[in-house]
Image 1 (cartoon, helix red, strand yellow):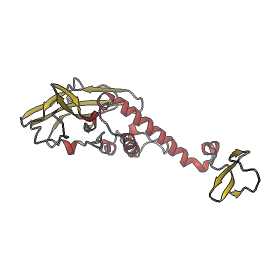
Image 2 (spheres, rainbow, N blue to C red):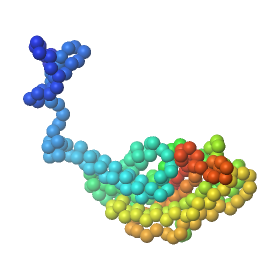
Image 3 (cartoon, rainbow, N blue to C red):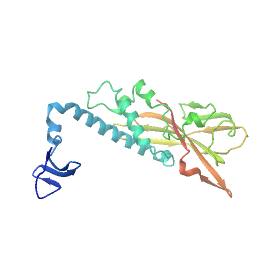
Image 4 (cartoon, one colour):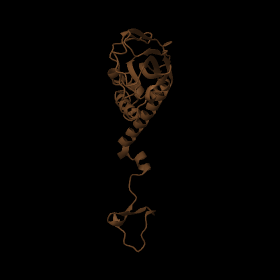
Length: 249
């Protein structure tokens, strides 16, 4: 960096030199940074290329994952989801012990017990986590995907947001192949309940098990509504809705 001593004061780039105004006056510096060609070919940047390749794979995997769950995720609001998912998919990618560095894959990592444990119990809405909202025990039948809650008391066994008059439960099974992008999701009908002290058995049964070559992800959802003049409206556009990964097989 050098000071520019001239009657003509300019700002911008010319012949590889950048002219700009700083606190010490007008300054000039040569164009910095590493060229794209060097990053792509210089052996000194092999780690950079490996990290870039895996970062791109993680970003693509996250997009595929979110799109596969669009039917259940569309009304679950969380601004941090993309960043949180990138972080957790990176951790899962690291459990791929068969691929060379730079080619490790989320899909392979998810076949390992370690990879499954990382994604299990993931909450898609950080503002409404299942463990903090649902205070009752539930049972999952992995053969059918059915989720049941016995003798559920909505008033006592749930932390409902203010203004909510009703809650809906549903469950889903997603089979997703992160390598091919092929997906199949099966979603149960919603079970809609008034938030009162009546005991009720909640049963969420997907129509079938999904087909595919990926892992089966069992998911539970809670959606909150406010009833006005006999019509139920989703509460605060889904800010309080829960979407949670119960199990991975």
